[in-house]
Image 1 (cartoon, one colour):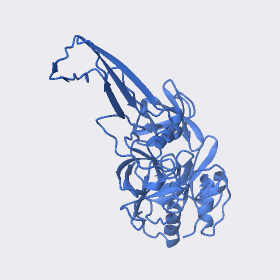
Image 2: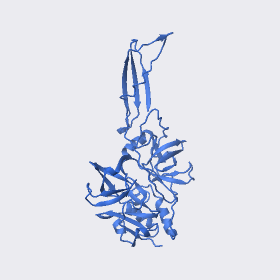
Image 3: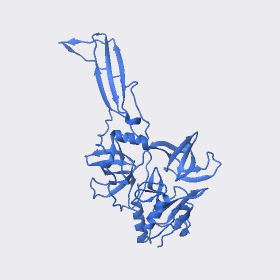
Image 4: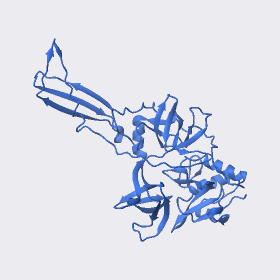
Length: 393
């Protein structure tokens, strides 16, 4: 926020007109800057003149009244994820996405405004995903990945690298792939989503807006669901392309941007083959890349079955492009028997409509939805319909 104060003193010693021009850079549609001008008339003040010099009277108090601009802003709960630290992708596969000079940290004395919980917002603009590194060096370890349009708090800026914080990831990204300032605020208004975060131990997601209907899924505390519509006491949420309803008594609603996801080393159980380890390492390198319905590209976008199809094709296993059809391949096993590389299938009363690759440690990697892209989740974020083993040991 920039604040410019001009004080114009009239010739009347008993009445001084102070004119305050207050400019606040508030991001609205079309990136317009709005000016608020307030006039404060202070009467009964005495101007003392000494040696031809005028003593100026401060009228700072009361300036804040009526001159306040705020934006609703929220930040989401953390997501704990893990994946193999075996990523060697580019820093960002993008043209110079209108990257601007990174803004200096916000002056907290001047403004308390935040956007989606960020006071010094940066947004990734890449074709696929952006590597977050432990140190400002392209040879440094990758600690996380940001999908395009993911938000971050900019902590430091040396011109070439930015130190950022996003979700549970803190590290360094190339500055050229992050937009800041006016451009970032405008982009945030365009891409932010309404999210329901589960606040109870287990949330029933139902087929209708009542407690007597079918339960479609059981969601653990901290799970995040994209809100499609809001009703009195209920929210309509996306279930990997399906629709369900959750009581607002057990969720927290907020406006959010996508966040970076962590990349930590997986721990495999005994007897896991090198092929399975390799497949998981291969699949998780695409975390953060986009979801595209009907797509099969691991970099430009895939849907859930297209993602599985393309990952398995790299290992000589060819699957149909349908989660329901893929569930008919291989051998069904118990979830307790699952090994990295096995397939978890999810669905509702309409049947199977989602598939994911188990990566061990109770987690899956999957092309989740257009708003989250390829991500890592708890394997039991929904109750699996079945688990299938396609890959031999």
